[in-house]
Each structure stands twice: as C-alpha cells, then as structure tokens.
Image (cartoon, rainbow, N blue to C red; front, side, top):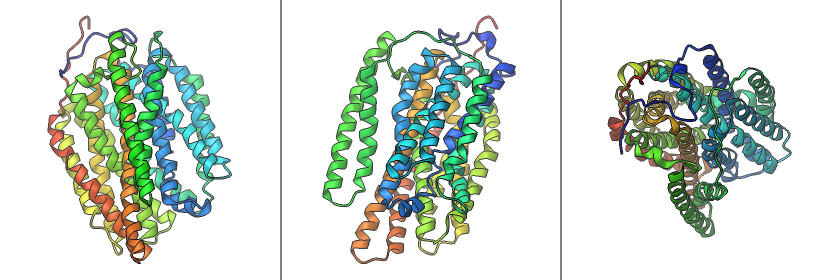
Length: 490
C-alpha cells in the first residue's frame, strides 16, 4: 500500500484554482451542509434516553426497542455505499434536496406513528436521508477546501459527527421530562423543513458530475451483507437456543454476501464502475484510519445506548437527569473540536491520536467498575473522559485518511468512512445490548433482582468494550499525515 502527495485534480472534481477555503460560495455551501448535517445526525441517538419510556408505552422489549437506533444505523450502512455513485453522478444541490426531503418525510412519519412498526419505518426513512448527507459534506470539503486548512474544517465536521450523537440523549431527556416521545420528532420537523428550503434556495453546485452506471446487484449484496451482520448480532442476545441459532445463521449469510460484494467491487473497479471503489484501501493510512474509526464508533455508540439504560434502571434516574448527566460530555466534544483541528494542521495526527485512544480506553475500563451504588458524579467524569478522548480521535482520522487518497476517490473514501462509521456503531449497539441482555437474563433466571442483574449485564458489556479499545492504542502510532505538495501551475 502506498501514500501520496497531492496530485493534479482529476475528472469529476474542481480544478486547482478553486481550492480556496475563503471563497464565499464554498463557505456558504459548507456552512449550510454543516448545519443540515448536525440536524440529521442528532436524530441518530435521540432515541437512547427514550428507550425505557418506549418499552413501557409500546409494550416492547429492550432488544426490540434498540432497533429504533440500530435500524437507523443499519439503514445508513446499507445506503451510504450508494452515495459514492450519487456524488459522482449528480450535482451538489439535487443530492442535498433529496437527502433533506427524505429526512423530513421520515421525521413526519415518526411524529405521527401510532405504534412501534410505523415508528421504525419513520426511523428508516430518516436514516436514508441522513446517509446521503454525511458523505456529501465530506466529499465537498475535500474537493473545495485547501489541504493546509482541512484540519480546521474537519474539526467542524467532527462536531457534527461526534457532538450531535453525544447530545442527542440530553435533548431527548429534556423533551421527555415535559412532553410525549412524539415531540422529539414534532420539534425537529420544522427545523428540518427550514434547512431544506434554505438549502434549496442557497446551495450552489461545487462539483462536476459524470455519467456512470449503477450496479444493482452490488446494491442487493450490500443490503444482505450489512443487514445480515447486524441483524445476526442482535439475535445473539435473544433468549433461548433458537434465537442464538438464528443469529449465527444470519451472520453467516451476511458474511457470505459481504464477501461477494467485495469481490464484485474489485472486479467492477477495473472499469471504474464499482458501487464502492475499494482501491481506497491501497492507502495504508486510510486503512489504519478506518480500523481505528470502527473501534471508536463501537465504543461511542455502545456507550450511548447502554448508559441511559444503566442510569434509569440501576441508578433510578429519570429521563431529564439522565440527559443532563450526559450533557457535559457533549459540550466537551464541541469545545475541543475546533482546537483539535488547528492542532492537526500544525502538528499532524500522532500528538492527538495517542492520548485520545489512551483516554478512551481508560474511560471504558473505569466504566467496568460501575455498579448498583456508583455515584452519578463518577459516571459523569468517566463519560467526559470518554468524550474528550473521542474528540481527539475523529478529526485526525477523517482528515489524514481522506487526504491520503487521490481526488477521484474522495467520494468513495467518504462513502467508506460513512459505511464503517454506521456499521461499527450498529455493531457497538447490538453487541453491548446483546451482552447485557444475555448476562442479565441468566442472572434473572437464578433469582437475582432486576437491578442487580442489569448492573451485572452492564459490567459485562463494558468489559467487552474496554478490551476492544486496547487495540486502538498501538494503531495510533501508524497514522501519518500525507506530505503536501503544491500542484503544478500554482
């Protein structure tokens, strides 16, 4: 695998003269995309604190309720590979309009849902729009922002990708303290529609599309591959041998479909017809960044889904207290993100990734000590530490990973980043819930109280996460910033 210096712009991207981050057009487009992406990504985790309420209101189990989050991320993992094609085939403005229209429609469906099934459909439609937004934002930034300033801009993207999911539980907790769960969607709907109308009126096209065919078979393989893996993981936490057997079967189906998908992309990319061009992995920096991103997302989303259940079931906190307890972590991410971008631009990724991965691992190990009598202040401290570590990780990974690619692979690289982000997030959610459910169910059958059983299940889940986090620390030393070369003619 090889690295690169900045090459000449390729077909399908803007020429070198437009790579100026102080352009009014570029600043307007990026600003609108950032604001819209924040709104849509926020909804990825807004259901976390609401799960106990929904379990009671809709008479569903924890395993079923977590699908309102897992299905959102799974849909994104299935749809995002298609965005590599969409971003090359269509202009910026129509892609934006499609994304925000889908998200707004999904929000409307969820707000008016009479029960669990329709609510789940609304979340899936929401996710379809969200899936398009993030690769669109990343590809646009890589196309129009000068290399020397990408760290700063990616720092702003990190706010969207990390802070929005982190404060989702806080916002839902505040809403649920005074209103019904449907208001989580009712209040978002006018904001989404406003973003859609403003973007439709003001966003301009910043890339040059080219006609490329879409491979329908690859889309089908992608759906079966990612869907089988996540659905299988979720079933592993089911009660009884039949649930476990079904989980194993779905994992095998997903693995076979994903392997077939990979082989097909390798074949199609020879003629530049791949749905998801895997030549991005020829870059060692990109490959390592993707592995580290996956580990980080497993930690982030597994924690986001588990902590509200722990705080409400074991510690007896209400939804508002739960949301407020998680707020400092989200604020920490937001405050640090711009500084992290500037540090990256000046010093590169290593000085950020090494302490970041260490903090994340330390925070997860501290969470393995949580029990029935853990003080909320200690939990909040652990969550702040985790948030600080993740804020040091995301910007360097996004920036160094995508910058190591050639411009014609930016859209595919962005799609890979988004796919892995959501797949890992869904894996984190499914695995943490599965481990917790399996452990607590076993203890409940032995006569242990629900509080004690849940506490033990949470301990087991965080133990898995803590062990996984250790693998990211040595990898942090191998992510390198690509040397910047001035293109000819500048």
